[in-house]
Amino acid sequence: MEQGMKQVNGASIVLSTPVKYCLYARKSTESEERQILSIDSQVKEMMQIAEKENLHIVDIKSESHSAKNVGERLIFNELINGIRVGKFNGILTWAPDRISRNAGDLGSIVDLMDQKLLLDI
Image 1: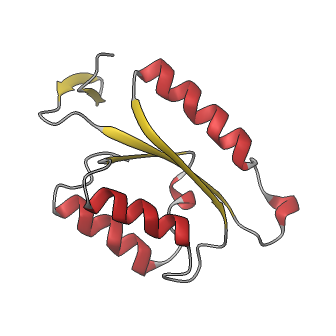
Image 2: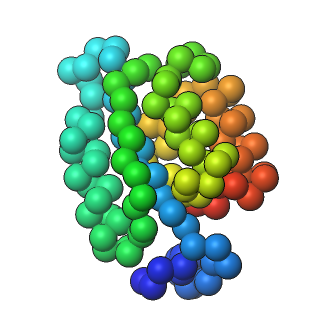
């Protein structure tokens, strides 16, 4: 797929603003033996997806921290600030629960989407 294109319900659409992705990988520090994929494995799989889908990755951020509590993840806060200042406008993550497991952080993501600062997850 070409840069600036996105697949939606089987149809290709042209995005007026090219999407610059930040790849975000996270694993909880709680019960690490239960983690499905390590951070390195998440990054590797997402890079394969990015290459296959021709996604423009401008940054990679990763952290080992629980996402249960609001405001405690420094790297997540860097991700949000990077979106606010226009460094990137898309997030590529291995699974939705890697981004947030609490309403406060999820609200930040929704707010950025409402403001059209975050175009794709």
